[in-house]
Length: 249
Image (tube, rainbow, N blue to C red; front, side):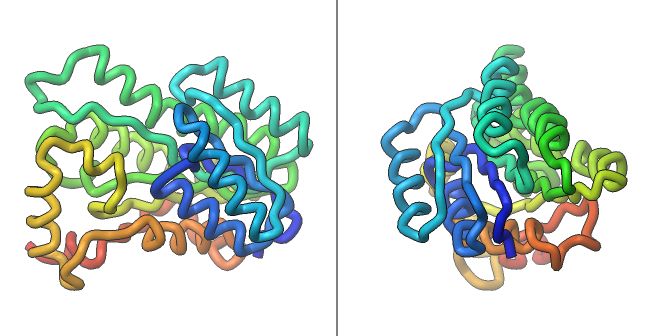
């Protein structure tokens, strides 16, 4: 479905981003750019895995919370390929603190890496999507419901969902589709950093109809669909992928 397309997935060295990049590789795009920040070896491994699927790939190191690095990443893509067709905004970082202990610095950094990066990267993507394209953001249920220690990230994810609705309307004349995938609790290294992770995991499993937490692959398939031509009539939506967790009171 992505033959001849150029793809960028940020935060793609590990976890959800890696799963998305590998899933998109199955659609044989022309090139996949693997955005990452700190994990050089993991990014190289993701590139190698994509290339084993006979898809060219390149790792780009960029802290998306820094505007100049974000702009350099898109400049590199433009110089290399002259275009971009699919952008998946997955890069994220969180400060798991109670509301009363959330500092201004933690709030700003979380917003910069998540919400601001989604907006600015979408703007830069649109400049390279000369023949239309797809933009998909990643969110989580902490944007809809209370989760302990999740204030800053939950607010940032809620901002991503709202931003996607505005972008979907304003970029539609350019044939650029914008949506968000909102996951429930997903088993990743980042999630396990939460100080109450095991408690949260047990609570989620007990309430989820399927009786488990999610995996990165659970989200990757939905992202791949939203990047495909079959999703062209879905605009500005937040698709909840949580195994039915949010259906059970």
